Image (cartoon, rainbow, N blue to C red; front, side, top):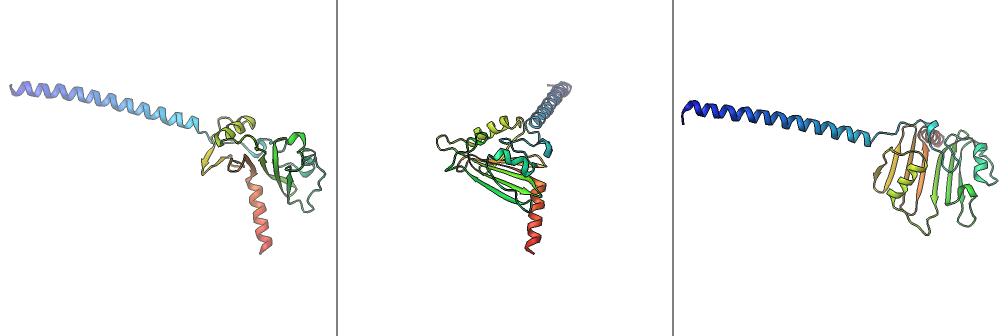
Length: 194
């Protein structure tokens, strides 16, 4: 074959290779953009404020003790200092109707307001898997579309102002915490020890 013919064939091959490379690059770039945007849509961080934190069995973070008392259905006295934990055990006594399904509850107060709600559910007959529990919580607490971060059997949604934690290690367990109030409580407690 002549040199011109070989040069022409090489030039044609080079032309088609460059076009193919350009197309593959464009396709790869488009797929990358789709993957990134789909991932971003699936994992939107929670951007709810404390006032938008969900109510759990009629309890909301920031409620005063007097607002909480009717939900408890029990005759309990407010903490004198505005700080303290209330332990409600429904193993021997039936819970009030609005707390049906709860075995144990801890309600923690700081500066006269509820900063943490912790429930252990009564799961004697029906143990639940963590993904089923978090799915139900997302629906019940209007947090659908907010991703749970799961690590070592503990699921969490961090909204900045509040954190929702769930697990099923022994039975279904839920904790809803006002981060800022808890930090202030710990700070005050640490100061009083020094």
